[in-house]
Image (cartoon, rainbow, N blue to C red; front, side, top):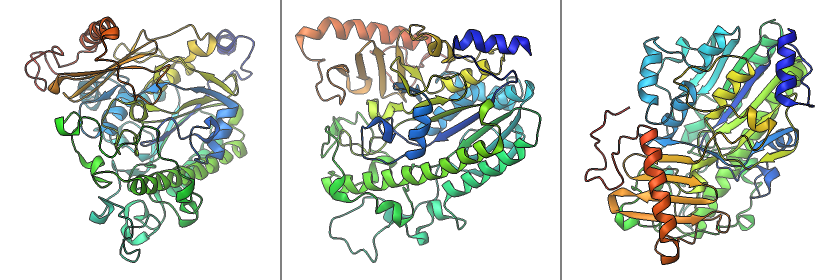
Length: 477
């Protein structure tokens, strides 16, 4: 017990963690939530009073990135990485090894350390969830079943009697089963916490909302919180997304949710529904946090909140997340609990998948060699403890990204196009510098760094100049 106390003294310095037990870990995971949708950060009008409280009581990592996806369903890649700890091009094989019991998943590692593990909500990982968690309820698929009229909408002036409406339970989706899925998840979380309160063992809870993924549904009173005339279009709003004709970003399912070309009206409605879905989810998070306080376990519980990636919802003429712009690769990341600095922000870039390694360090579990993501605890101790020289992300064979300091390079290999942004001066990524002679050396430097990062991460793309961008000569990981 003395060693445990010493660990937290060393970790947090003067912010001494008073408990000697292993901390409980409450992991709350949203779906498709971009970094700008925490009310306390003041970037949008979205109301999130409970996430605001979490922000005020803990530390926010303002630049938490998803490492990418090997599939159009970015969710499955992000979640496979967070459960396995393996990087984007290694995660598929690691998941197979976990399924074959050759390696261990995040919850299995926690179980071995004496934790009771609980799970409810979205899974979307190709492992039977009951094989890795102790207690499981209401497992959800990648997204609720939607209906045809939820796409290519809305059109201004359409008949409201026949239009798709987010509060109409006849449309199914999140209303399937009678109660909204966000409410059901909160019910499960409250029940889990009540059960855990009677146990002596520490708990690890994985509570995964499907919100605010589409179909973005919420009770009408939450939609009514956001009058259309109060919603601003993103500063980088466009009717059509960049390079659409060149197929830089494929016109996949997510992008068919709103009409082409985009209209200010359609994007405002989509953002209205997005904000409402988040605010309703936030109310359910509040119920979970209230149950934690009532349980007597809060003083020994670390809470980590993040999302699997971001979402465009009108930025750059995009609606989905299958792109490398900040709105889609960046997610919220908050850590709160005893010993964590309150109302603090850290701008050092991390990966959202660092949540797993962070919890392992909190529980004093040795990190397996296949877990390549890093704990954020050293950053909490000293913000100069940067775990990553640069941030890399990838999407299929069509996009690659590197961030180094405040510079960002996006490459579209199939159309042989590069974009360079100075994020310090251009946070909305509106001023592409790649074709300016003044920045030619920077483009070359960033390209070399990106290719080195690709090699380090076992990227199946052999080179940004390869003839075939989808099939690699390397073994695919």
